[in-house]
Length: 205
Image (cartoon, rainbow, N blue to C red):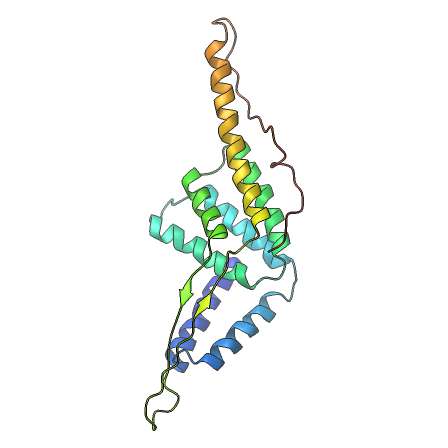
């Protein structure tokens, strides 16, 4: 479903660009209509987008280039901007991230941190112009749109804390194994000393 939504959104953007030359009024209407459409089932899109990202981060860039892999994450974020149940997405994403980290299911820690940075720093500048009437002297308008961080600081801080917990756990286990007696079997465990891995409702976007 998510992949179909991504393809559909890409198709509407191409129509807007080629047929309507990125007309502002049509652009606003397209965004508003897509937002209404994607939220008909309320929290379901949030859950499915979180699962889509989870699958991508488990698989990594297998069969695709790094650029294509990052584009897939960006496209999922485009859908994320339209959903109203962002707190639902955050809950599923945090639970899935905990499983990936604790069970070592993530394909790449760098990819995980890349996704976190996309949540944390979403400030992008867009601008475009258009001519009001082809039969009159050209009039150009510039529009600037600043897109704030995709998620609240409470959510991203929790995710950063989870990564720190994993690093601390690795250091603790390495120190323990370095002083164990030769006859003792090596210990393998993941310690989570803080509360970041607890499933709790974070601050909504």
